[in-house]
Length: 278
Image 1 (cartoon, one colour):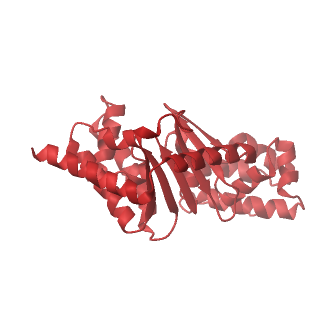
Image 2: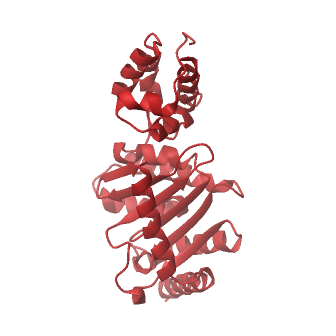
Image 3: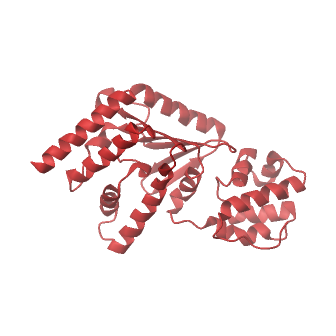
């Protein structure tokens, strides 16, 4: 094991995961064998190695003991854990950046990856009405950094189901929502994303309890993330992920087709533009 600490500027979580794989294989252990004394699954170890999960300090100390790595993971755990996102969302945001497929259900707001700068600013100001302008600017910048994932023309594949409430909930300016919906429509028409709208007419549905994000990876098991008010939980248990996947499948079955969804999005955006000019 290299004695030198990791450089925090060079994808520390990916480097830490690569070092974990080397140390585990050197010890002749499988992922499941390493996970057993940590009371985690082999798939969790795989996600640590792939960089899709954060290594917490208590795991790092135990791994150092088990693999006899002379405190390497304890020393470098801090660099790998640094994040510009809130604690409840940090692990999901960092996994999102590595995902090859993202499927998301949004019940109230346009998903972060699809937000425009003006829309994100209104959202954060609504969340934090007394925050300084500098604080809001930082939040908006971080959200736009996430949205840069879509600058790649092919990866990740993003499929969103938007509740119709997302299209109807405007902020201080209807023009901001019109711009945001037009942005989504452009991404759809450029074949960059898939979007379905779950109409009010669908009635009660499988996603009534809140937002849902499913993430798939080339070299790690899939993850499911559910979020509430200031809280969020990332699941890797196969049974739980399968259950959340079924929820998403039921939502897509109840939603409008992508073609009809695009027509509705553009129609609502046009209505807002007309109202604003009027």
